[in-house]
Length: 586
Image (cartoon, rainbow, N blue to C red; front, side, top):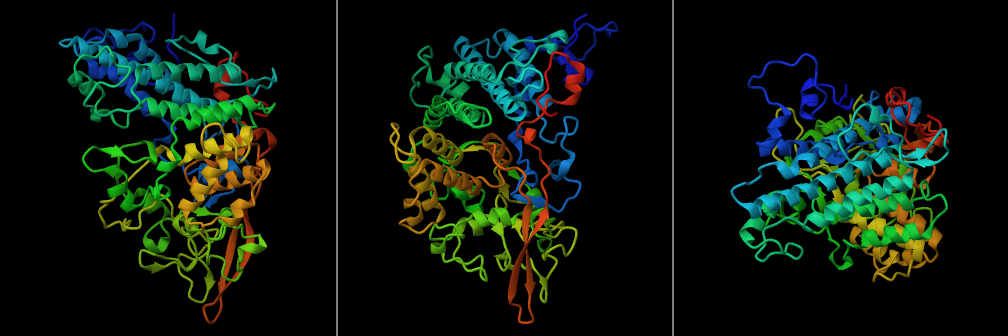
């Protein structure tokens, strides 16, 4: 007897996926069965929409406590446990195996029925367009979920020694077929790109109402039909530009040192070209790095009248109205729980406003005034001692004048001397008696990431100042630093002339620009950089005259081992399916 895939645990899900015929079948009644998909478009589309719910970036993971960028005051936090020695194939807070495979299985079922559903039987042109759009979305979503599976679970096989990727299933499968081995890494990348390329043959570059029929849709005769299926109502569903962005992400992953073990320059070139497709340096948003603030959400993100995001936003979720992030992350003096505490490690990589690193003699860094004249992005992203926030002076030190915001003053106080500010709205009120009225924006991909992807790849293949694509790695970094508030001309950048020096600067700029967006954990691993650096903090002591003095300390160690550059396949899957090969060390 064939059995449906074991990712789904409820009988309802098994029925929905068209699993085996159970020996105890109920008599026909008014309950839905899988056959409903053939005459109920909403029910059928639910197979596809379920895959959207499995996107890992549907919310920020706040996994920085697993890195050198942050610690947390929540000692039950799974990422803290992960970083301090509890990461195993049986305990993996970064496990996406089940969720992504579940979404893929739903997509495979959807692809098997999409041509047979009466999406709009009264209008053949609209019916055909629905099939086209939904098929494109399905291939795109399958590629996206496979990308996340690859990122989280690829690694060298414990037996074969090969760099392994993921299992590739293109159809509904049985339990026996789940025993199939993982494809090697290159084959996995090829399969994901195949999904993306198929999606691009079906999808428009972006969804939105048009006045003329776009190129590539020559079969459409009526603009009404096009707008009915491909119009404004579909914004934030996956489109051609989003697919290209993920192709860029995938190419960068494949070119990175952890997987490009021979440093194949052609992989870097592929990554540079893939990311460049969606980039125009002249359009870099002047406030793009502040995408989460009230002004950008209320007026900068949406262009009046057409519901069109600005250039910084490649893909986002619908806006949400709540104060959950502020409740979790504001300092305790502002009714918050202060959960994410940025490290001194992260603070130290922000340069001075003149662009020089703080350890450079030309930076004019003053250890007795460590936050003065720094890169303005430090003030934008991190709450430090003496900062005024929500009309309150935040004091993160100890001694005379200390408050509950001070170092380890309460269970919700900072452990490092800092609080996270990025992603939070200063106008939000997490007071339990207050009603949330502020909108938040959750980003899947923003353009700055793609610029940084391009800069990294372009530098590796062409160096800092060369490129056949019209703009160089150095051009990108110059624009990002200028936008962030570095004094112009950027004298420090002018001194960065080698590929090696530019590589370090690109990594620093990436760390700054993408902090708290769940990038650091994966960047360290794909670079095979040091993942064992202890998280450090500042101890600020106020004297009798309230003058602060500063000392620094290790707050929390990192207990990673070398094999942890690659994540594990879940232990339960290895037990169930003998054809699955575990990664080395797990």
